[in-house]
Image (cartoon, rainbow, N blue to C red):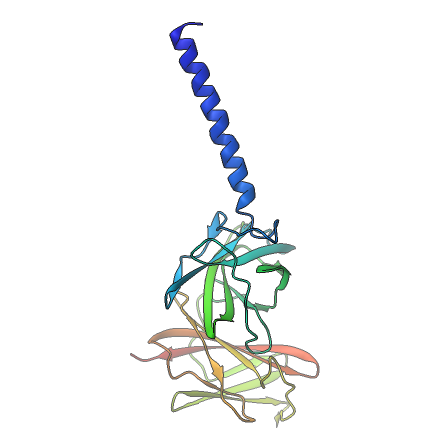
Length: 266
């Protein structure tokens, strides 16, 4: 064999070795396939978020999903060592909440994934139509409530919708919901057929659940229910901007969602 031929052959062996290692690495980073192995981030994931001396990130499997059809979404919370976080605390009735919304702040969903292996989460999700969505994993670990996000993609023609003007009233499923703000608290009153609804059923350990997302950067605001019997939430810490509010409440054994646009002054 000539010197040139030997060099070509050696290069071919090197390529085989490189692709072999890549294939092994691809299997090693699957956050769900091996429940007992530490998981590093797969191809899709959020930017790390620092909490004290620990940096966590959200690692997801396939993030390109078919519009209008149910699909599986696998994800895990990854620590700075590349291992799955496995210790989650109950927060508002669940160990993991997954909030999904299209980036124009439409098509809101609130899901509760299943832990299929220690630290490996799975849910079935339907992205109703084309667009780019943001999925927020909302959870508590080590006594701290945290939120990490990842983009989801549904292929097809997409035309973003403008946000409705700010309003203190919304209608959903025949229910009228009025919003009143006072001293950093957001208070909601639900009525139907002109009569107040006073027998709301508990949802996630409270009379309701509220998510606030800021237009533009999709900043996610933790909004805690106010103790007591009112449908009220503490939003005093919200930064300035235009927000979309998603209020969820339960009545007659069905979950209802009312949406508001809200301006927070600097």
